[in-house]
Image (cartoon, rainbow, N blue to C red; front, side):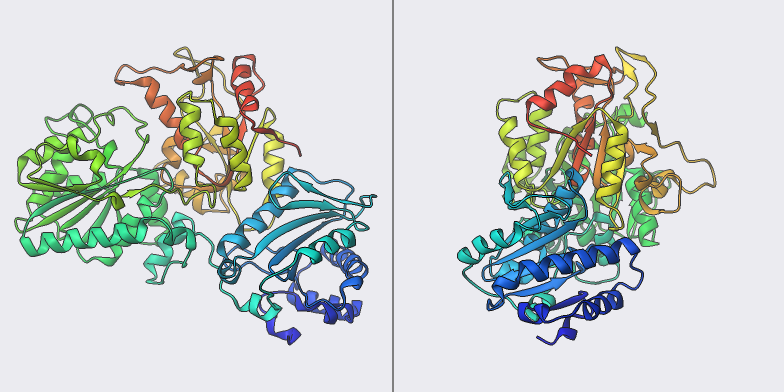
Length: 608
């Protein structure tokens, strides 16, 4: 290929023969022209990799291989694998470390490159190419290469690299990509919910991600559009319920629908989510606070222009006791919808195990009570049929259930791991933990918060990713009494006229509260519906493993089921990380059994 054709995507790319004929000055000039602010350490690393590969690749000079240096992963904040080798049927990621040792952060960095190229690089996916990764500590004195577990990852000394590539050469069959094909291919990573909202707002298409297209999301949207059309045509009222596991895309479905269909509003009682998305979008009409909406159109008796109301976390709607009225939130929403007189659609987005506050335990029964006020048609999965005896009709479709978590990339069973963990169903948890590692989800346990911070900082250095501390709002409670929990400080309440600390935590990299500073912890209330690339979950005294079962150490007189609420809080905290979760268990004897549990189910001790 023309060496210049990949200029905007990589530092240098070409055939193996072209690389072996490339002198060091030409190589340095190409990479320095691409990365103009390279540090002395970076320049030294380039020289290191150049010399190693010039020696290691000479035996393969006649192979139809291609090589790429410093490929920038599009839309990934500047992340760059050091070297990519393109062989028939496979892509090999090489990461060089000028050290005699490597640690967990190095392995996770390499693993994430392998994962993301496998999932999000269009040509790799089309031809089903195998992606492997090799970590090369250049000061390691050894003569061999060895695999690490079963994740397609290897460690090699400089002198052992030729031997390993010889083995790969013998097994290389299938489609052979050249550098130009690779660099011109689309690469569309899974966006965060904030990134997705910005894209939708700009009226740009979302990335054509295989993981999304393989879920129910396209079909779910199709069904919701048909329900809206039926309501409009027949002049009737409809309640459509979309269920889903944490991270399955319920918010994404709601945002897409509200932007695609005129006279639609997305309502959420989740204050932090509303604030963060409104700040991200610079717009307060795309997503609105449930509190403001119900006050405007219930208390003041006006009729909104929107005939389609999307209610986020519908199962968490407040009951009449929490409202301190003789009606519930579903009563208000149904009444507002019926005031349209002609037709209306309420779309309820239902999360599993997301009830974390008093007044949220009424569940879907509140919606059945509310639709007694009029003639309502219900659409849901078949599992919910018996819960709506007062519907005049009930149509079912399993496509209204989003059963695949997208938040954690390819670790599709994270939500089940968390559910089984908190339900005390630990018989198969060790195998599930192993599967998470195979799916390249990073999960570690540590008793050192400093080590967790070091790992997060090193793992995502200059990669444009976001990390953060998470902790239960009741972490300091032990047997109903508050005790000292000095390990981490939660986000303070926002003062009047001050930017919301929730917004600062997620959106303002210059704020002291910004998540990646790892100074303040977000609680389950601050983080529900939102996500980070890596979370450090700081375990509290409020939920502890006794050796046989979980014990809730926080109770409240207004809670009907305080144990379930506490479990739900930790379920939220444990499902916020896209790439992984570090479990920080403070070194306190009260938490020894909790720490032991995670070790017993196969969670690895963090090493930095």
